[in-house]
Length: 342
Image: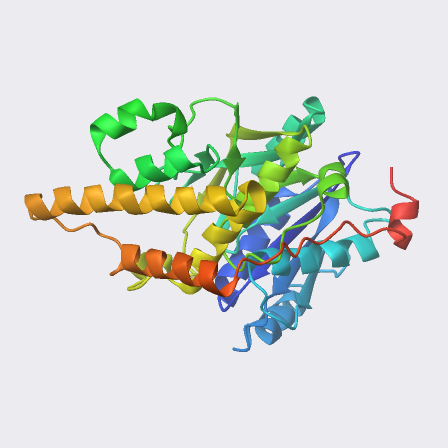
């Protein structure tokens, strides 16, 4: 049994069978660890909660080990995970607040000691606040999950898709080459990440202004600004299907929530002026790419009217004052389990 406790949060939205499979994988990997798993249904309204609750009983899962919760409101990825974290803090693990919080996607399946290896890494590196896994698809192909933080130069490089620009701005390319060993990164994908509780005590929980996308980027940036590192742990391997709940791979138009999240990330962390320049850089780079692809007779392979939608969104935000203040959730104080925390 490990000395410190791990609270695992798995957020479900209309994928109950897959979520139960993810929970079974987590339960297997947490064998011998002090901890519990919370499955949060993010207001699916399709019978997911009832199905998962009934399955938990049928499988004989103790509520001390696995509990199925209903958020009652779909506020997005950050809000749903915050709901689970807050419940876990209130109820505790053996009378104390959890030492670590593991965020696991409903389509992510840790194996070969993946969670324990993240735990070991945080135990051995006291200034590391986040430990993320090496992620691969069902076909074994690695996924890009290690990144630099978005920037004006990164927006230009990523949208232009042009060799000379990429070489010039190589130190601003957001996706890092898939690491072959454990390294510190800017941010890591939230499909499988272990977080030290003390970090959340200091910086707060997810900013619930984000509905989907950029919320883990924002959280990692806040952690790094507070002096904590974010590490990509190569030894921790997790299978991930990807985009099951969001449908990202089949988007015909870019959703407003993605545009909202992107703009909010830049404004809240760098200011409105920086956000304007980052958007301008993306539009410029995207125009370069479209011209080149058109001359080559190739398709961009992205949602229709992407640049038009981005430009209109930014203009509307500027004209209507749509730039929202962060809805950051502070770490709760005075909860009973915290009184006995280690």
